[in-house]
Image: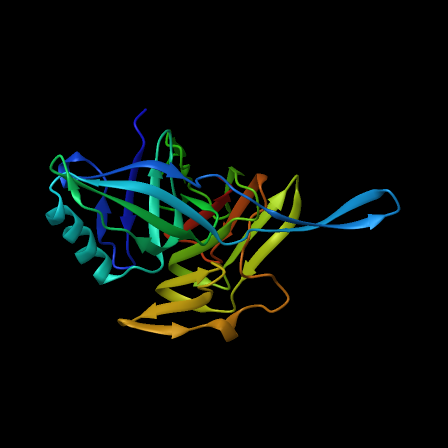
Length: 274
C-alpha cells in the first residue's frame, strides 16, 4: 500500500505531498518512538517508575517537481501557519501527529527539480480518531455499521455500546449531547465495574452540550441561541466528568434522563506510539 502524507493547519487547510501538487516527500525518518524511562534501583534490581514522551524530530526530503514554484507554494502554505500543524500519515489506517516546522533548506535546481530537507518537531503521540454515535428514539431497530470506527444505533432509554480502545495511554474524549436532557450521565464500565462517569446538573429542552477532555483543550459548553455558555459549574463534582478511556474493552452507557429523541456523539482520540 502506498503511504500518503499531508499537512493540515488549525483552519482545516491542507497541503498534500503527491504528484498532483508537484511536491514529493521521501526518506522520512522519525516515525517511530523514543521514550524517557525512569527507574528506581533496589540493590541489584531496577523498578520502573514512569515514562515520558520527549520532543522528537521527523525529517524528510522534499522534491519540488516545478522547482522554485513548488517551493514557493509550500512557503505560502507555511506562511498561513507553521506551528501546531497536523501531519497525517495514511497507510492501512489513518493517524496524525502534531508538529511544528523547525527548518526547511533550499538548494539549487538540478535536472529541473529542487530538493530540500525539512525537519518537523514532533509534539505528540500519533493520534487516531474514532466516533461513536449513540442515538435514542431515532431508530426502531439496532444497527451496527461495519466501519473501523463503530457506529451504534439503539432504541433504548439507557443506551449502551461496547468498544475496544487502542493506544498506549488513556484516550481523550469529546462528547456532544444533543436533545432534551435532565441531569444527563455518561457511564464507563469495565467488566461490570464503573470506572468513569460524567454527570451534569442541567435540565434543558432541545439543547447541545459539548464536553472536551483533550489535555490542552478542556472545557464544558452549552450552545444556545448562537451563544456558547460555560457550564463547568454545573457538573456533579462527585464524578470524574472529563472522561478518559483506558486501553482495552469498555462499555459506554448514555442516560439523557428523559424519554425522547437524543443523540450522544463520542469523539475518541487514541494515542499510539507509532
